[in-house]
Image (cartoon, rainbow, N blue to C red; front, top):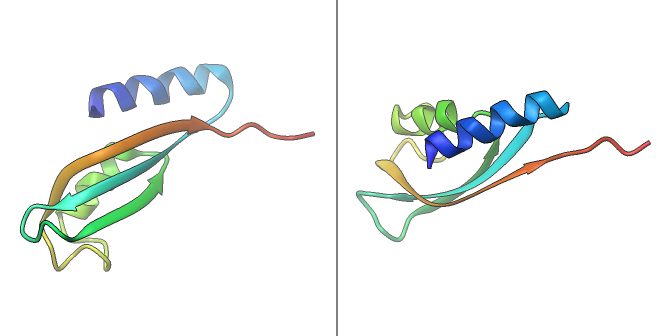
Length: 77
């Protein structure tokens, strides 16, 4: 899934705009704990969650991506 996200992001730059990823991750240590986030760099953001750098997810072990959607925002003139 990360490889696909990287390919989408690279394609977006050639098309003129960033790709925003909306993702849902689930805790491996507490299965009822989920987090929804948005980023332009999915790989880096997941690394930050897993390293405990997010105040909202630091107390749980997050590693399992449940869902992800990529969208490109277009400027409205």
